[in-house]
Length: 409
Ligand code: ATP
Ligand code: MG
Figure 1 (cartoon, rainbow, N blue to C red):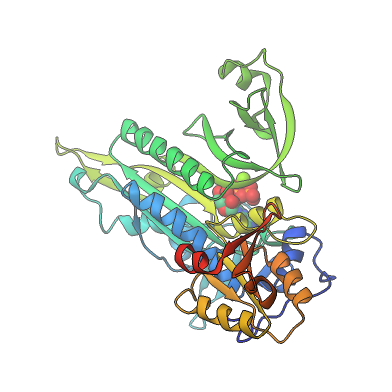
Figure 2: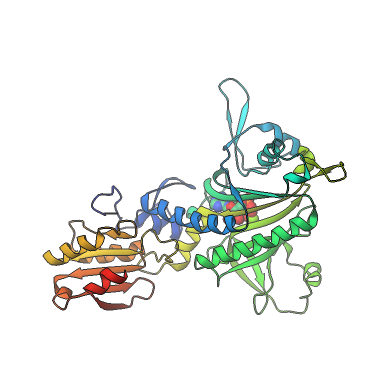
């Protein structure tokens, strides 16, 4: 991508109407645009980050046998009425709208009801099970407070996975596969050391659910962790009984703030029973389908990564999610010529700063945008047949031979 050709511009000053660091930096760097509180647009660079996060998630879910679908955001009230969740008293974050032909529609805050309902068309026998489907889908939630940038959107991108089983054991086994997949996903995004599977409340069918909490000063959740962080609990379940149940009543716990980047839930019959999702077993008996659901906040993850790794100069993206690998600057006649050469064939991993700006401004923007490696080819370095590489994360610079750059990068 050529910076001279994109409509996006970086901003010198922090936007006044954005208090969250992630939102402020992402707006300044041209990754997102703010429409109003909790409502954002994703611009070319921001969209690339989102797509990279999606790719990692998609790879790990496909590995454990999940199939991708895309459901509609528009919600027929019917299945929601069957579970009691269409009422504003029960679910207080609905956006609802009207059909011009009469009747009301909801904008999906999540998809348990419609997916359970959809599966009635496809599941009838034990031979149809198990199955696992997921989607990347914009959810709508009329959040009361939306002051955390893209950590809490009124429209946000979620990955939601739903699993369907004939037995509790099969659900347990798949649930464990998802735990492992989630650990790999957060690890690959550079959040392995700071993201912990956390005990949370389980509802009527399950003792606990699990959240994946990334320790973060501006996170909205409070968690408690033991000495080696092998047991982490959400504040909502942090009590004597639960500690005893987990066998850690004598350990010392400390408090931390964290952002929930994902959660997993053994739903069992919570939705399949009221919605009548059943199958015929080997003995020709009708049984209720066991279900699980598993979310990841894709856009929140982007905000968490932005917030967590940023420094005083700007964003710092881990390579797996960075919009580009190289931020390329050519200085001087030959420097520009060589930079153009390097850019050829590497357009998809290189952001070429070919704008008519002073090198100082380009250097500052390379830091604000947080691209992992800055490559500077200037007449000065070319005098020794060299180019300068700077790693954004560490600020370390080194030189490599021009030929080596073309061969190895
Ligand atoms: P929270 O406790 O943060 O309100 P939740 O428990 O309601 O979230 P789920 O309904 O389980 O969340 O959604 C799955 C995932 O979607 C969450 O783990 C979180 O990462 C993300 N998420 C939830 N609400 C938002 C939001 N308003 N903006 C961005 N991401 C969100
Ligand atoms: Mg939660």
